[in-house]
Image 1 (cartoon, one colour):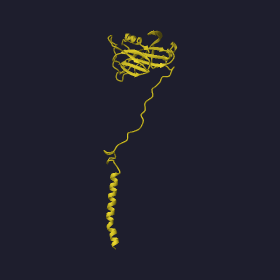
Image 2 (cartoon, rainbow, N blue to C red):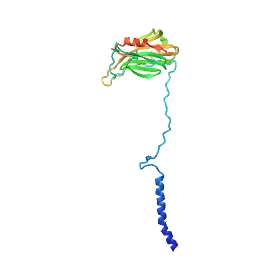
Image 3 (cartoon, one colour):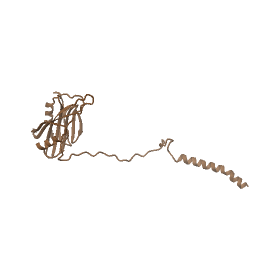
Image 4 (cartoon, one colour):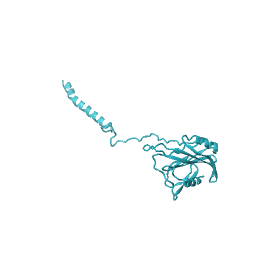
Length: 225
């Protein structure tokens, strides 16, 4: 009888000991707060996922020239390049040339394709590897310009003591979303080359804007390095 009574008297203490042990285990086994996020004393390992960089594009030899320049109907009107305009020399070491451009014009791109722009006054230089152009290959390039309209046939000339071809084409912008008006761009395109390198230089001007002298000075400043 005493043995049974002693056993029964010890059971509450045993239950209490098991309950305290369970609480202690629950408190020491987790460092997360009620929301499930790590508590102030916890640390999170940094992510080891690798970053990726887009591979540079290349231009294959023998491909056709760049597409036609296009004006923007929503762009503010462009004016003549003033007579007192300051010009800077742009040196493209990776493409191997230099050329003057108007100070203050926005530059976009680098390497094989660079564009300088002031509203709808646009100058673009595209350099690629390829054979020297001919009058026939220039005509073939122009035939792939889609909606561009040829204004003058290819003309052989000399630029900075080197042979070149010049053509003139025109394009129209998409209509303005509000007024429906379109901007017509007249583009002087020059084909320049040295060895296996060839450059196509487009100098675009909206109709009614006179950039003849400034653009002539710019293209005559083109130098291969």
